[in-house]
Length: 141
Image (tube, rainbow, N blue to C red):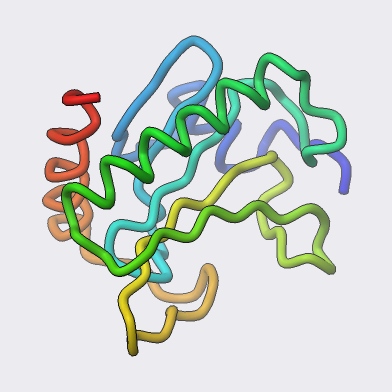
């Protein structure tokens, strides 16, 4: 998968598309997935313009994974799921739908199936409310 700078995550990073931001540092941005597989589904997007993890710099990888870990802690505190999934896809055959490397942080509850990936948009007010709850715990760490 080659990098295309008109992908939606690149546009979000440039401020050309809106997002519901949860966290940001100099190397990564985390925001609510607009088509979540579960309530509280977040995306961590490195600011480096790279399609797949194979080409991601060490600094961006470390910053992204540290952010994913801190967000998993915040999600666990805010939403009290039974578990938290952290995943990353490389290439269309693996399920990657946006050609910008990114990490999924997805809360999981026993007996609750995940929604299909990138299929059903969520209500913006619901996403904002979940983001607020997660941000409150993000700041505590």
